[in-house]
Amino acid sequence: MFPSEVRKEQRDRAAQWMDKHWPEPRTCPICGTNSWNVGDVVSTPLAAGSLDGPVSVYFPVGCLTCGHTYFFDALIIGAIEGGRIEPYP
Ligand SMILES: [Zn+2]
Image (spheres, rainbow, N blue to C red):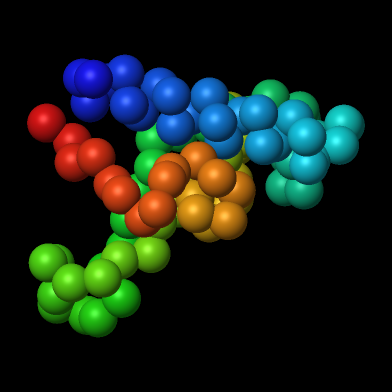
């Protein structure tokens, strides 16, 4: 599977989780609009300066009007499986 297909599948899983767990209306607490985008998975190293060590993995869900962004743990919401992360090309 191509990395772009993996990312789409992960975004779809995150969006499905949002639909199940985040009730409407999903009003932005900053600007009051209701238009969100599920972005690609992001990871952050757990130790400063260590890029090849363990990471935390999150899915960003950002307001399309003001940019306010929530980050959800990708493992907890089931957007990725078993901690496996597909690298970006
Ligand atoms: Zn907003």
